[in-house]
Image (cartoon, rainbow, N blue to C red; front, side, top):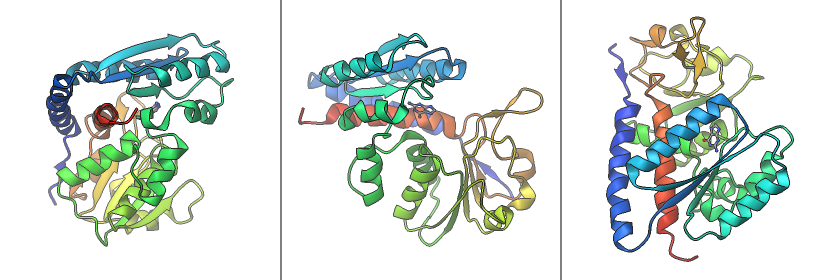
Length: 283
Ligand code: GUN
């Protein structure tokens, strides 16, 4: 079987171009979308992610306000900064890059962000809204995966979807989004028995575990769709996903690569959420 490769980089550029048009319309109305990006500490991966997010803001026409705080910043002063940003009318979205230094309580920090500025979709008001199907911000990686499935015409009703990984950022929300589209969803994790049997059933497989090349071609059902959320380094230091791309080619019908798959979509959906936040009428 020929495997079609999903071009996440191309779709993310298309989305950002669409958003650029929407930003121009907002600017005509005197609304200048703004995103505050908060980075605490020296995590080198986080610095790269934050840099890419700021670049995407430039592409779309969103003003980014950058806050780079030292590792030893107190939780109290971070909470104060968030309160200031909550009250700032020029800031429509607030993003606090995770992970935070160990002396900070991540849930407490996220809970301080005003839900209508929580463009990451991490606040319980937004995760809860997702659970019950109410409006709210959906976290960006799962939203990006759904957008890819939509733009590649992957039908989900009645399909068997297997999600490997149960994180708050990816595994749990993507499971809910697939369920919302009438898929039959199985959530797998490190304690799942017979993981290989579960994976073999999947019409659509989403892998978000952070283990390089954990899923190999022999585990897949012929013709399945594979979404790889992993971002790892292989034994040669080369970027790779949680799925062994080479052995899955020829077995999957449709598959995301790493890089240029899910990664760029996360940022495109962040931009989407920022534009949505700026469109919000009531203050
Ligand atoms: N760390 C890893 N992924 C993310 C993300 O999507 N948003 C934030 N804020 N931090 C992250």
